[in-house]
Image 1 (cartoon, helix red, strand yellow):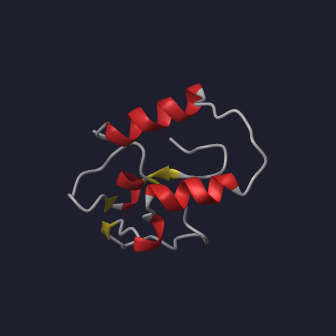
Image 2 (cartoon, helix red, strand yellow):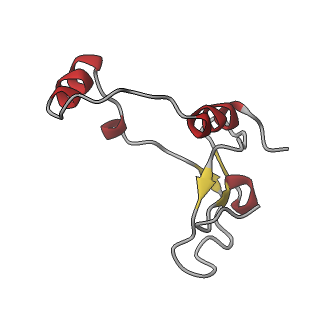
Length: 86
């Protein structure tokens, strides 16, 4: 399945999570036609994506107060991240 913006599941291109499994929440987007042909491997996440809770709270505090919400689409994505793409 291709998303509205052209993203596809990693399984289509042989790109898994580091554990070698394909999850429905792992989406990839080739930046040009055939860019991922013959490419196989796994997603590697940057340490820059890791943050301490105190740093997150300090960053959030720099913005005007706003009610935090969890939308249904966020919950659906969280479920997809744990589902295997079989």
